[in-house]
Length: 149
Image (cartoon, rainbow, N blue to C red; front, side, top):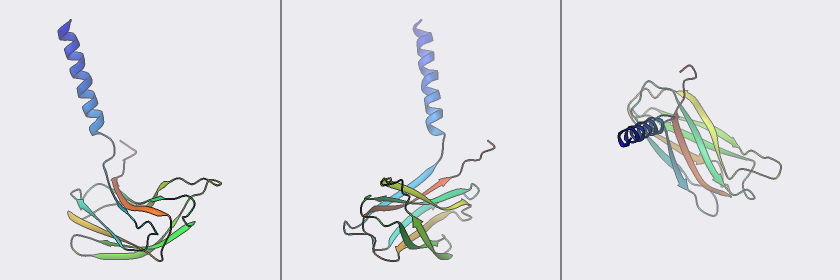
């Protein structure tokens, strides 16, 4: 009886280990902003080792419901490991649900991104003006799931 119980426990532990290792792989890097408002440049780094899988890049904001604007205009600069630079404007539209807003929201910036080089990719977020009510800003990069699997 003791042997059977030991085997059952071993199988359950193995299943838990397999399940916990599965799922989406992602990286989130958050920086706290000044309590008076977000106005400075925030730079984030992502160390890429996968040049085949598609990734999603999102901008993450944590904010105070009463003080934040309806939209935030910013510039996003991406620098690849071989120093290729791309910069573009991007506007985040803060969702409203009547008088309620979530305290944190993820905004899709790009999907199906293939990082063609191994190494460190840098992302620089620069707000176009000072935005009150922003507590933290970040970048989330994750492998996109393949629906056919």
